[in-house]
Image (cartoon, rainbow, N blue to C red; front, side):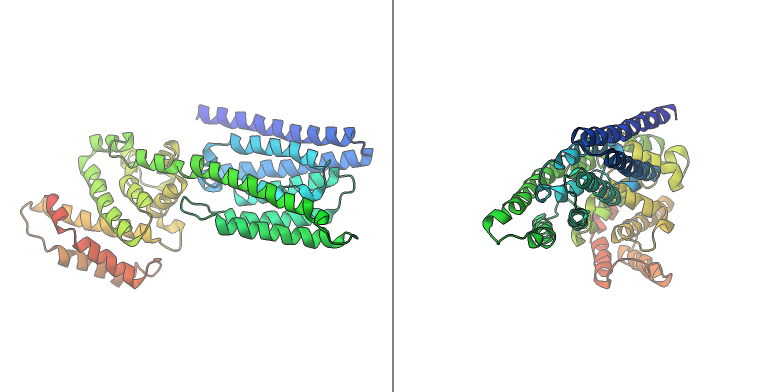
Amino acid sequence: MESEQKIDLKHKLLYGCLFLFTGLSVFAFSFFTGKSYEAILRNTIVSLIVTGTVIFMLFDAYGRGSEGFSYDNFYHRNRFIIVYAAFVVLACLFGLVPDQFWPYMSFFVILGLFSNTEIGLVSGTGLVCISVMLEENGNFGVAFMYVIAGAVALALFRDLKENTSIGYPTAISLMMQALLLIAFSVLFQNRTLSINLLILPILNLMLNLIILLIFLNIFGVYIIRKSNDMYMDINDTEFPLLIRLKEMDKDEYFRAIHTAYLSERIALGLGFNDRAVKNCSYYHRIGILEGKSQWEDVKHFYEDNKFPKEAIELLHEYIDPKSTKIKSKEALTINLSETVIASIMYLLAKNKDMKIDYDQLIDKIFDKKEDEGELKNCDVTFREYDQMRKILKKEKLYYDFLR
């Protein structure tokens, strides 16, 4: 508990420094660019309000744990602080260059991916306002243009995965930015249409494209794909948590191992998230280590060991079904596999030499779940449900291995 308080205090100090840094930066740029005292006061106040709001949203997101942030940003809080501070300086500098050149579309995406979509939108909007206020002839039509472009880009890039194609989102984002530049800027210039009139908008699009491609590549390699490495560690039967479970209760350990095997077979056969399924099968009963089973009491196991966000979400759904109205295909896969394994292990515990009709047992389990209405809120098709039954029936040799 003491270490958590120290971490909280450290970040409170960092956010306090970020708050003061933003105010001082905007004040200094306003002063040295010869703004009126009224403009200096306005700019400083607005910048502090924006940053204060962003900091409040960050604390609110931290209060919700890892679910409050996208990807693994909950565990890497300094990313956003560093990026936001750098963008504050750039926002001030943009006041000195033509507004048609500002690459805010890509900035919105970066801010959103390093926090969450809502914080990215608010922080990006605030920075655009700072640039507009510091511009010589600031036009709030420019602010509307970049906020709309940023919102579109955030919506398109909000849920990146390892296999996500960024071609279409990038093309659509750039197309929207081009249309907005024409609608808000080019059309209102009283000049003959020429290539010179389009140079800055073209440079804007090129700069946004370069920033996006570089950032998304780095983000994909070091953040999204990094979850692969984490899954390799936590889905290893030699991971410390599983070793502790094995030492404490071998029956629970082997139940988890067998459930994971069947669940993974179904997930691979039907194209579900096999890594998260295997992970949930291993660890959904890990609370046995402390004699606890409620989500609030066991979630620290997953957060302390930095499980990927999608893995924690599936574990939350499986351990606390009331947390979601619709049961995912992955959760149903684990539930069916665990029920089959638990039933077979129970029968074999009574009589190791018992002859079990596996097809009949599996049919009874599936029929019972249908009769009890457990499938009403499941996100699964009849075909997928039937395929689950067939895959489980194909594993008869594996069931014999349980003896």
